[in-house]
Image (cartoon, rainbow, N blue to C red):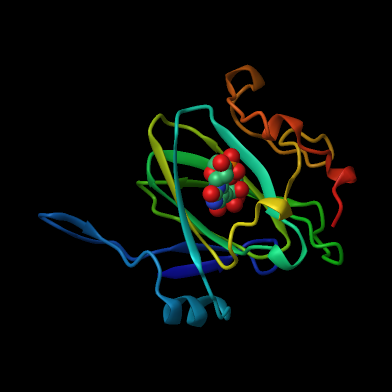
Length: 181
Ligand SMILES: Cc1cn([C@H]2C[C@H](O)[C@@H](COP(=O)(O)OP(=O)(O)O[C@H]3O[C@@H](C)C(=O)[C@@H](O)[C@H]3O)O2)c(=O)[nH]c1=O
């Protein structure tokens, strides 16, 4: 496993070592000790999630408020996405900035998104399986989000707006300036 911090402090791209043989491949998708050694972060993941999406699906930008905030370790098992993490930590030097990373079943990259970020992804291939760990439980009443195309965030989602598929909930999210932090 190798890890590299992004321009956003505490947000890391990780690449597991891939063991290939005649049967296929093997990776350690998460190892608490290795993760701590490479990032300095003592993780305490308590929930694993998985979603399957068609090309054009955009999920996000999501976060949970206050004490329910979640750090996430995200990856793609099959297919590909462009994954986006937005720094919404009010006192951060990079407040409002984002990183975009191509995550795919092929490159096996992972993104560690600390608490205090909004997260979303756009799916680039049909039948994409997205898998992630969270260090806090889902809490419906603490759910919040930012509209994916907010002009202040300037995120290039790669696909044109008419090809995107969003949930009704995500189509009603707030603007970046209107989120209560
Ligand atoms: C996220 C989540 C959803 N659900 C339920 C609620 C709802 O009925 C159904 C689908 O939920 P959503 O539409 O919120 O799923 P989705 O849009 O995939 O939400 C996810 O998006 C990405 C970008 C994230 O960062 C995640 O943290 C999460 O917010 O699943 C849970 O039971 N547990 C969970 O942890």
